[in-house]
Length: 125
Image 1 (tube, rainbow, N blue to C red):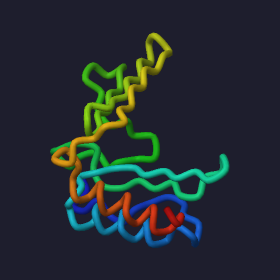
Image 2 (image 1 turned 135 degrees about the vertical axis):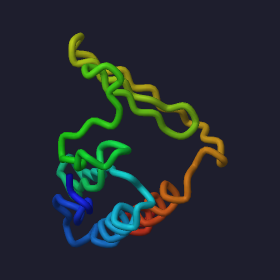
Image 3 (image 1 turned 120 degrees about the vertical axis):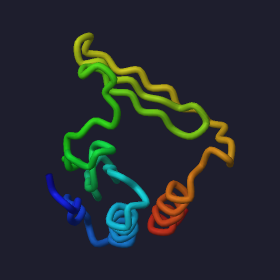
Image 4 (image 1 turned 60 degrees about the horizontal axis):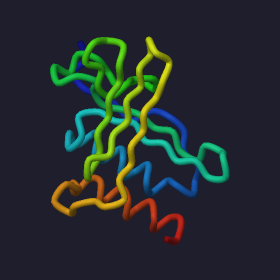
């Protein structure tokens, strides 16, 4: 088992360097256990990063292909602020994606706010 998750790995174009720096800070400071972050612009990858740990025991490093939550080893589930979620079922070869357009502020974490603010600062939104 590694003692430290090490640095964030992946690819980042110069335009999104501030977002990469923020993501790396969140992982390396331990504010986020493990995560991945992807940005595409006009169908092209502009940022593809991952780092930290895939488990609470800190025994499995987060890899590029790490799935966030797998309750039975075959189904990946992800939940977001406001009740949005994604389910990927490998056995059934299907994906269910539900994204809400009304987010309650109390469900938004400071890390989500920081990443979104940095992202929109870069793209001018």
